[in-house]
Length: 137
Image 1 (cartoon, rainbow, N blue to C red):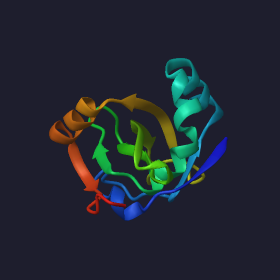
Image 2 (tube, rainbow, N blue to C red):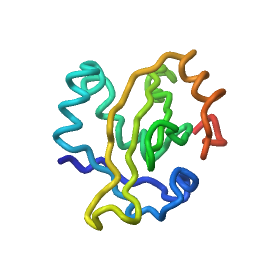
Image 3 (tube, rainbow, N blue to C red):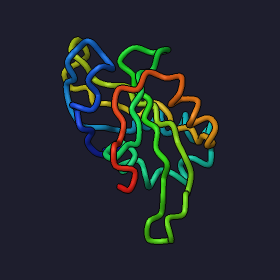
């Protein structure tokens, strides 16, 4: 298990009717293996950004397919390299909520690279719970 960082719980209001147990986010060994098998490039290219993705998301959407689950959308930009876009991702986060084991943490289910058009489709068609207001952050 790997500790990733902390979410701002207020930004996730509306994902679940239940109270969140914690702000901590982890990546389990099992889910790491899942990501490595299904999306090989993700760990190499994006794992170093997981903390930034969860702590400074661009959009948080409710996952309509799974309970207590958020879709975190982020365009990753290398600011020290002339604002180069590294890529765009959809990080799927299972939230630890009331009724779960008290020791549970919010857990990354998967992380999927997405293109600009797919990102726009999520924004246009998804249920946005929170979005970054300052585009220059």
